[in-house]
Image (tube, rainbow, N blue to C red; front, top):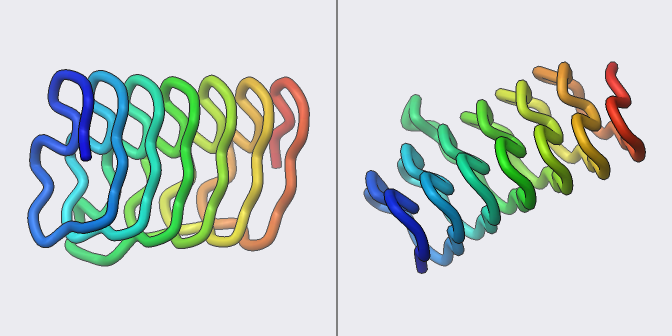
Length: 115
């Protein structure tokens, strides 16, 4: 389900996803069981044809660069924005874990907490 301009607009072979916001999961491809709330959240999920599953992104640009990661939760403006393949992470707060690209099982809770 998508609400917003270009939300899930390129989805192909995708299912059980929720995208709310302009370009939320806009470039997502072959993704399942994800939730994206906010401008460009989870925008690039699985652009490389790999599977991104079970991610939750709330806040503009949260998990924006994610491609192949699974089971991440990012809550906040720019939370985990740079993550591409890190899995099982939790970030809460503006820019929390923003620089994390491939870290696994990290928790970041506060404004601009970075790895």
